Length: 281
Image 1 (cartoon, one colour):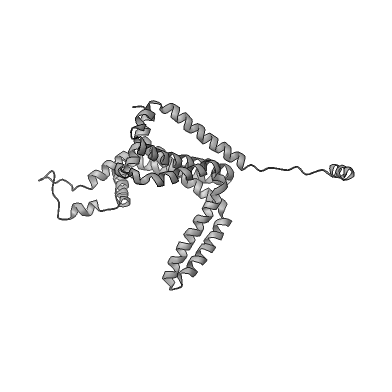
Image 2 (cartoon, rainbow, N blue to C red):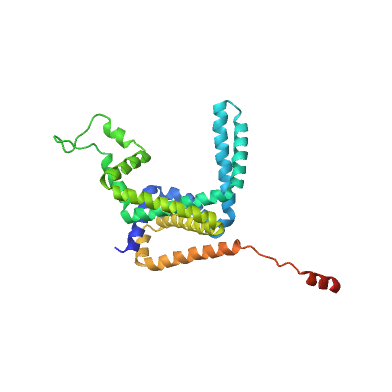
């Protein structure tokens, strides 16, 4: 299978993992919302990102204020108002720093995704999780039943706990991969943060258009899977053409955002021109 076909296959597996086939009908509304939100970010993300960050700060500040009010025994409404106002104002003042931090975080996610795909980390994690949730074999019994409740206790652990165990497993079995992963993510975070600070406008255009493309593509794939379950078999045959169309859409989104965020400079009239205009009047 070609690289394009493998990418599409893994995308379909991810969709079925996140949204099982029996729940696809219930995912129509969220998928449509993802397509709409993705289109907004793709073509107007640089214009709305500050508003989104401000609303996120207000929401987070209100929640923190609510928690603080409960802890101090004060009225919850007062805590929500104070927390939302303080964090919202900080979000407006520190918007450039927030965009730089967001740029670094998105760069880290991209680096993690690319490195993880190259090293097949999702597949290795899936195999590790499947074996980790089973009782360990013993010399006397290859498939032990385990102590009462032990398998259930292991299986009930959250994904984050299993992920931490997987990191420990990588550290013991393949330390070079874990070291390269951390180095790759740290370097991408640093570069993304610097670019977000130096090239503020271009960072907003690049990352919001990419996020919009991924969000709308994911929602569209869920909708397509809902109405045409075998779509990926046909798309795989035309993977290069589909990739070219996706790249063109991304480029179009960046161009639209660039044109929409340009600063229009109006030339000021020189003194002589102003005098001529006054005489003509």
